[in-house]
Image 1 (cartoon, helix red, strand yellow):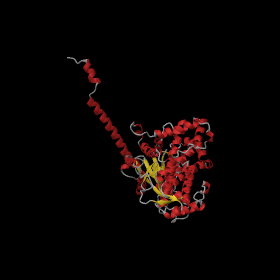
Image 2 (cartoon, one colour):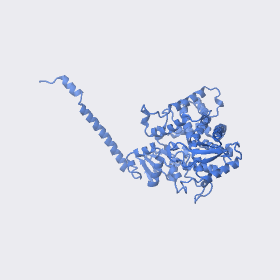
Image 3 (cartoon, helix red, strand yellow):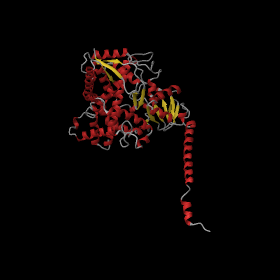
Image 4 (cartoon, helix red, strand yellow):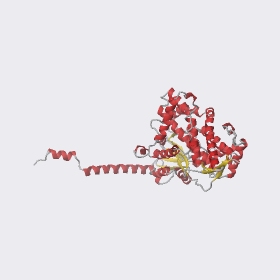
Length: 501
């Protein structure tokens, strides 16, 4: 008795479902086992095995990723460096380095490339920016294109635009004080954010968004959400492709920037606009291959987001530190009002550059609350020695500059606000000995907007303290979180304010 050809075809062409499932399960288990074995090998005997750190972090990045998503990785890193020493392994391929010599090597001496993490931070895959570029030659070319827009001589031309925004701030506060009977309470965190956004839009886009004048605006919330989302999506880039989750790049912010660019391109008075956008558009029109239209968009979005958030937080932290240290507050007020005797005395940046205590206050603020609190991450292209350890090629290394800023060996009374340390010797540390200080990074990747930020910080703080008395509102939370830049977890800081006596 024979077997039908049909039965043979069925049996050979349709394997048993259980067999298929079993094969898939075996494959998954084998793949998982290989990953576990590889992680175990790298954790216990790999090139980084001798670097100290939490035991679990040798095998998985999950504990570190949880800290990043919570905004607490900077605190975790500081605690790790204090517990384990100058170099700590916090993930299978990531080490934190905090000794001064090695940090300088990473940022300046070796000038290590930015890590792959920056590529994941890009808001548009077709538009890499000065911030996200990893290729050194590409970065140098792009930075040269922008250098004119951040030169001191160019910034002088932007000063009237900045002062116009600060004038709007003064008018807003005056009106609030009048409404409330002579003294009012402001949310400095919110108001400085609105001011910084107005200044960035006025100087970069040729017109203020007038957030100070018009009150709260959804843009402010979108800024905050963009930084938090950027931090999370940087670690978990696959989230960008899940349909029901928010997009990495906020569509409303993106549309706002696109509309501004299109309006400018259609304008007939382009040369009359002394701002960064026109500088980029002129470059694009001369040579689209050097700077594409989408790259103009991407750069402007980054400048707007980063430039407004960092200065806003620094201004708020400066006022917070001053109000919690009355002698420093009064000393700065006396210095400013000695230079500007009237509450409506005109202010120019030239009049602020030689105020020593003002600079000491701002430097000390950025020591205690640096914008890049999470450190500066780079990646090795070849084997290097850091903190007496061999670091193999392909390893991500974070220069944990905040540990240096808070290190008692570098800064006596490191966790205290002591502006005087910048003016004279303080407990054995010379005023000139401040090499362990990186508020604007260092080396070839130092912040291109450093002078822009300094000008804005000086003009704003001087204008406020020559016109108003500030009052401490006690018992407010100072808890910090870090999502790309440092934030107050409460998202607010209230200050009493009245016209100067």
